Length: 371
Image (cartoon, rainbow, N blue to C red; front, top):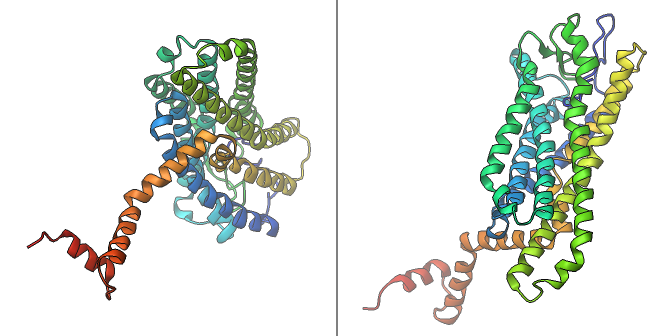
């Protein structure tokens, strides 16, 4: 099994799955359509919100902005699965299918790796600000966020680079959910590595290590806050600047915790399933391939939610995030001419009699100088 792209093992002596079950087609058609509708909208709204003045000054918000970009890339790549499984119910672009397989599997793996580790560094960022507040301004900077992001991309690219090799990866069962792509040669040593060993590597780097670091960081942040709570409440209570900083820090912690919870709920099930399936394959246990495809597909839809719902959870949990989003909406409304339109209507009502084209007539008279 492949953790990132959820493939299943190919046995040369038997076929895998002849076609996608009807419930799976409907799940991909309507489930992914729902995820895309709310995911792309929410991620774009998140990018706009985290670029607002109050939030963009913090390194944490910059990390969340990059996370939204990574999540959007994952959803973009998933459109191919939506079209192939949910709409056409068969393979598309067969002439370039091998190249598309390598591109899809690599980019899905890379974006999952990047999203997981960006969340890790969100936790580290808040941990530094909580435990070392006097050094945080030196360490938690936008420049360091860019450096960390570049390092994550380089490591993720190196880890998944084997998927770009034309001699290793290609089509497996085109058009079949979660098993469309796989080893180009099912008899090669790479096939054994891909199905029996690679899933453990993926789970280790994309789930186990990030989850462990996020849990440890969150626990230590909570302990530190509890120790210093009384001191913080008695210092600077009459200083607005310190109150604003404390509120911003608290809201960033809320955003961090909500994102980590989403990551746990949506990624742990598919990773556990991948470990179990890979173990069964490695020990040669007979498995029900149709069941594996069905289970993996359902969990893949759940996994996709991780890249679509952060914005809505942030709106529910953080008042600051809601306020900044509302502020952004008001800015867009003003830039789109909403307030100008209201002013023009008032001019028409108070100065000019009704005409066939009131707005245009009012604007002409309003702009002409007196004679």
